[in-house]
Image (cartoon, rainbow, N blue to C red):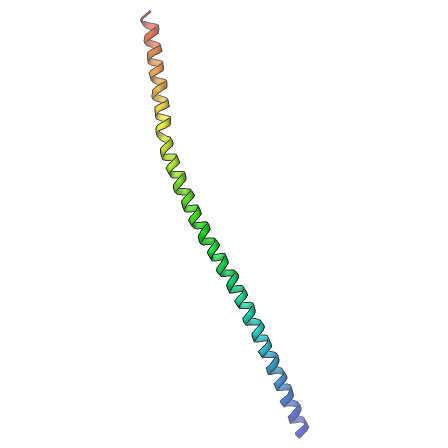
Length: 90
């Protein structure tokens, strides 16, 4: 009975040691995954800020462009009126 108890004790110690190694491996793996996820979150935040910046710059460009079309239309209309006036006064 003593041999069987020693074998069981040795097997239990081996299982406990393997479980401890597995726990260490799992902790290291989770730490690696946590680091990778933190990096992805950081990059996502940077991308969101960059996208918001681009959207605001695009909106400012679109707003600044609107008067140019109006000025061009008014200039064309003024040219048309002057041309028509010049033709009719001859």
